[in-house]
Length: 149
Image 1 (cartoon, rainbow, N blue to C red):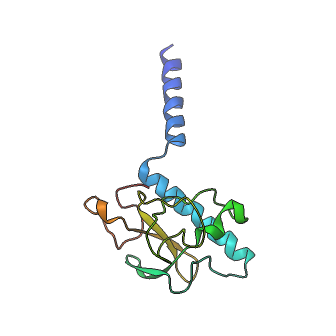
Image 2: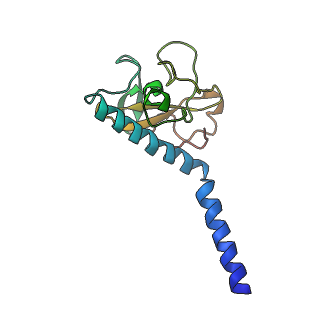
């Protein structure tokens, strides 16, 4: 009886872990999903980058460089892409400065990230919401910065 109860407990714990990823893991998961969507887009569009435009960029110190802002509209299922949502994308006022400026919906002023790519299509993210900067670990570094979305 004890072994059966322990077995059920372990299976329940595994199910919870699988179905409710930790906050940081969720962001890593979405980075992989976006990376796959970018690769698919580039494959079907002669290696063209899915970007807002060549002037819509941001910089990071880690990895050091300038990155194009991804046009999430081009990656959505409704346009033949892989994504069914715009994960963690912050909505900013003004043109050409967030992932929804290409026509996608779903960005939010309560989210915290802008997703970008380098010239080779490698996905990065930048924490951008200044109201939460006290919990941000590094606003010039790629990756999870202590808050999601």
